[in-house]
Amino acid sequence: MSQMIISIGREYGSGGHEIAQKLSEKLGIAMYDRNMLESIAEYKGVDYSELQKYDEAPRNKLMTRTIKGMSSSHEDNIAHMQFDYLKDKAESGESFVVVGRCAETVLKDYEGLVSFFVLGDKESRIQRTARVRNMSYDEAKSAVSRHDRSRKFYHNRYSDVKWGDSRNYDITINSSKIGVDEVVNILLEYIDKRFNK
Image (cartoon, rainbow, N blue to C red; front, side, top):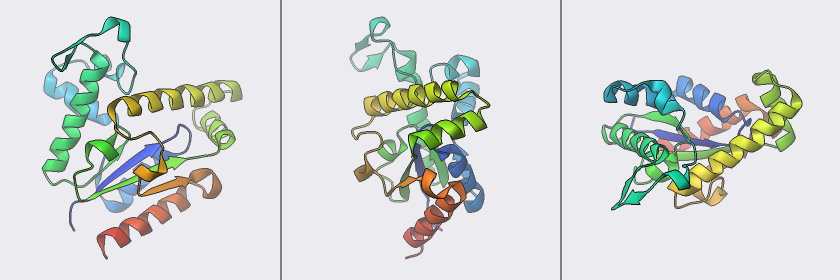
């Protein structure tokens, strides 16, 4: 099988992470998300929790400077460490699933890239978040809005395409309509057709 890189962008509460996990298991390939930071922290000899607090976070414009392409922003530096990590994995020929991290942009030059964006009806996402995260409805509603805003800001800062714009993905799919397992089946069918044409 040729190299396969599956990029999953997602709205918060859409089940995108669970979908990525199931694709990883069914395809028998690694999945990268926050676990990249553990590897990066170990390689750099730093505390994982120090990196985690800046992961997919907007930088503080008042506290950072960029001079000759070098940024003093922890958020910028951690984002670029993850982008480099993904490029190294792709360059090695490894097949993998990646969640977020602007992968559809960062890895766009690799022929084996297949990119999906998972969205959902807001009410369904709030209810799913409340159930999965054991939150009240109001806490879940706030979390959905906060995380979507943060992901959009992060993505649009580091990508030349807009977060969630269907033109930038192979498939954009609403998980609220058919559920996580059926989304996985549809995406697997698409992947099979892409790699076995």
